[in-house]
Image (cartoon, rainbow, N blue to C red; front, side):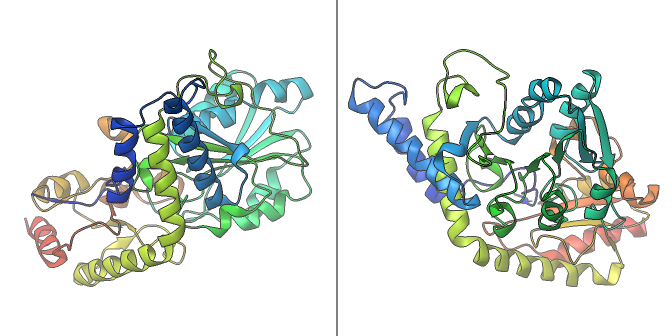
Length: 378
């Protein structure tokens, strides 16, 4: 059986998360909205505890946590949810970047079609966006700046703290898609100037199908979001529907463990990274993205002259890897992230994304390197 090395797409479930979730599937399965019996009250208490656990990661208040189905829904609620307010006050300019996930780029395109002006800032060849580039395009009518925390393809950490400094004197809302960085890089997201943060449980060893949007109050005022769905009034009217208590509990526990263990997890991932780089060194690969800014759990790597699809097929019995975002892999197109970084066509077509975690078994990197080398010989 091959070893799973696609943790940027989704992570395995942490055993302690599974354990706590089972109770709310099998025993305390009440509806958190039912207030007339103990089953509902226990479910509601569990949801509130999870809200606290998620909030603690970013130093927010429990009332600022809105549960969603994942970062994609959170991104949509953050971006599209501000549209009505932007139209009302006449601020219809939005800044984002060319390297965002499709869960940001596609809502932005919908806003563009609605009459908003969207500026997408290009990254450096290292895969990160300069704060000065944000400063150059910000305008008095800028409603929102949306910059991802960590790029899902390259693992490059964006300079969120410095972008915060650029926005300090501006009223624009600041949204961070933190799907890849939530629970891994802590201090960045605890900055109170970040108004909106999107997160997914399945990126931090929790279940699929649940996430959160943290909507911070600024001077005691909540971001003026408008609901995209209607019916029921849950989550302060912004996300109606019965709360999936077992999933929310799983997100809460995953968040708590991430906050406790992020340092040791990063060290374990760095050890895996070093072993992989030693094994690949003789092949002289290209490492895509500024390696001084890359998280320790991912390699975006090109073996020039060898097509990435061929490598994935050759390695399928050894390791499970990808060549980009899982959300677009069903119809493979050259990575918009690597293109925006200015990589040549050969590097892009040979690029692989290899990502792991603290739960990954030992990998025989020498065997992996040997299999790739044999492809280059043929």
